[in-house]
Image (cartoon, rainbow, N blue to C red):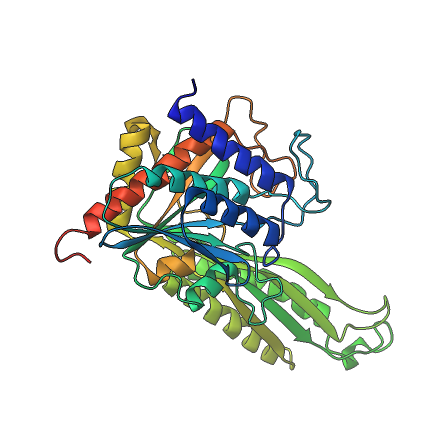
Length: 397
C-alpha cells in the first residue's frame, strides 16, 4: 500500500510531466489552465479562470481568518527542447526551460496537502500567466503585473512563491531578506548622425558609428564609477546596428540592451545617468541621441517578517542544513509586482539531483530532479499554514 508521501510524489510528478509535454507561451496557456482547473475540481476547491487572460485563481477557505497567497507561474519559453527525456515537449519550438511546469505542480501539490490541514482562514492559489514577458498584452504588462492590476492580491496578508534552481542541490532552499531578484529594464538608444562620403568628405558628416562606439564605452562607466562597490548593477549593450555602406558616414546607429539593479534608488540613478550621458555626448558631437528606457520588472523584495516565518517552516521540514542564503540574483522576476503590493517571500528551491546534467535555467538541456518537487509543495503548504497562524493572531489582520 502506498504511503501518503508516495501518493503526493506521484500526483505532483504526473501533473508536471503532462504540462511539460504540452508547454504554452505567455497568455496562451489555455490547455495548462484547463488542466489546473480540472485538478482543482477533483480536489473540490472552487476556482475561476480567465484571470489576467489565461490565469486561474482558487480559494481554499476554512472559517474566518487571514488570506495567504500561493503563486505559481505557468508559461514556457520559445526554445527547442534537447533533453531527450521520454516526456519532453511535444510542441516544436516551445519548452518549459524555466521550470514553471514544476511550479504549477508544486502549487497543486500544496493545495492537496492543505485540504487535510486544520487552519482558520483562506489560502488563495494564483496560477499566473506570462511571467517571461508581456507577449501580446495590449498594455505591455507581464502576467504578474496584469494580476496585480486586476486586484488578485487584494485582502491578502502575505504572499509566497518559489522558483526551482537546477544548479542548486536538491533538498536545499534559499530564503533571504530584502532583494532576491533584480529590477530588469531595457533601453533603446538611437544615435543620430549625418551621412557623407566617408572617403572624399567625411568632415561633412556626423559619424553615428564613432559616437556609438564612444557611447558603448561611456555607458560602462556608470557601474564602474557611479555605483558604490558595495552595491550591484549591470548595464549591457546587447545589440548594435547602423551604417549602409563601406564608403558612407553612418547617419544612424541603434543600440539596445538591459539594465539590472537591486534597489529603487540605484535603478533611478542608473536611468538618470544614461539619459544624461546620451544628452551630453550628443551635444558634444553636434547632434542628438534619443534614449528610451523601458521599465520592466521592479526588484523582487522579501519582507523580513514573512521571510523569517518561511525560514522556520523550511528548517522544520528540510532541516537546519538545508537553509542557504544566496546573494541576490540579477535575473528578473515578475512576482516582484505582488511583492510590492503585499508582504511577500520568494524562495529558491534546489532541483539538482545526483544525475543532473548541470544545465541552468533557460537551457534547452535543463533537467529537473523531480524528487525535489514534493519538498517544494510541502514547504509552500507549511509556510502558508504558519503565515495563517501568525497573521490570524489578534491585531495582526
